[in-house]
Figure (tube, helix red, strand yellow):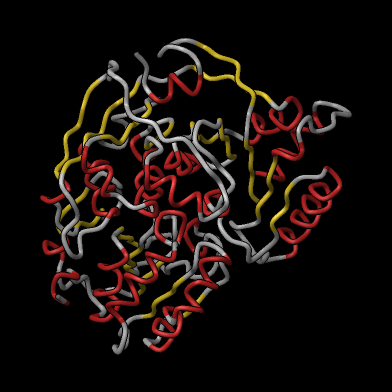
Length: 404
């Protein structure tokens, strides 16, 4: 019997397979590099332009003339090639692809390491380099070595103020930053049913932080209901009796709010251990925690209060922004004194919109806290939206459980 990755890729672990690509996407940073590589192949036309998306999210809007010129070049090519093009303000590539585009059983490749996010739908989704993306544009195909699979067996349910981000940081700690290199992670068990779609996207997003090729959930009733909202009817699936490389057991009910402390994602500690640490900035957003449910969790704590440290909130997409606007969540966040950025990656990659200064300390809902990533000489802690909200109100690291 087979793992989900083996079923989708149609090969046993360790074998090499050629695959037609169902969805391919790149952003403003990697897309221009892919275009340069494509031109290096000669006068080649994209094989399946209708399957390709180019989404501006990393430095969008452009921060200087050089960036603007490169974006102009890729924008014009994308339109001429017939790609599905998303300009500034539409949102983060992984989020846009999660809004009714990617489906269970598909092979999805993105020119960004966090493309594994889309495994939440039961797709085999992974990141590739820009030159690989150029070859995929040209041929519509690629190849993989089918990965071995590690099972993340979940039990229990979330208690108040413990969120999927706390679960994500917990499994990253258990595996370590290279503990699943070129493996697939499959999230199974009765507890997996209790993880909502936004949480599944968060969990699969951070699979790459263990070195994994991808992270996957089996498409179930949660998947079916979510995709029905976008007009898709899907078949559900259950794990087969298969051979996992190993199993990591986690009881979700045992979790507590946690942080990844500088400068490693797998150095994870209880929030309470760092309570009182002064902060210079709090950031809510990114492909890990910029979805509507994340903004709502944040708003539920800051509503009727004021933040006491500069706080930046960047919705993951235009749809997220509009939902937050219509439900009043955005007003709650603005009333609390937060700054709102254009939907996209925001300061996550350290290019604009909130990079920290030397010696400053930040708290972020992003997926990486590598040294110098979001500001040379700064320190960044990673956390859940509720921990970010509680800490923004206090101006220091604070457990959201104090707001119960």
